[in-house]
Image (cartoon, rainbow over all chains, first blue to last red):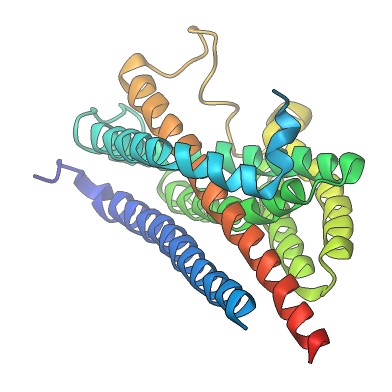
Length: 51
Length: 243
């Protein structure tokens, strides 16, 4: 499945692995922060309405 | 209808909620499609061998590192001139995405440089200006985090963004300005004579589109988050004063 990368296999694969980890990291971090902010704001607005 | 309507946080969130699923889907298709095409279905370069596959990560990431700063510059100028909070928050939201792209460009460049140039790092004009751009990103985010008053933070970070733009421009044109160092000039050009071969060019174009769309999607999500955090901060301040 993986193409023949020859003597540079380690170089190419490590570049892809690090980049994909960094991309996944910023995506996950953004989604987690978005979810947390949404939940906290909803709770604060509910407090304001009912309290 | 004016573009300034989107400076209204409610309108911004409603509109971005509508477009986000489409942009996210397109980003996923372009990014995965471009990387799979580039990694699995392109030949090795006759000089660089299989390391040419790093091109599909390094070039789009480097382009977006500079373009993200350009977007932050425009948003910062809008804040300075028109005092729209959403633009200041959009600039703040873009910085972590920009620093991620910059880091990818630096790391993949070092990994690629080792077998091609025989060194991980060289203090040549483009690499050095790119490293300074990375440090500007870190400084920009640190400044936002260090100042409690959001308007003061927006003012000071906007000035920092203007100063950092010099290094964003240098990162892009360092090779042309100094004409020295290890790094080559632009790999992609509108001039077919100067461009890389089509077999590398087409998957690169798709991957670049993926990086651009991913950037837009992430900035929209993060700007929404910043707007909500600002609103939450205002509510909590009012609650504290009411006690």
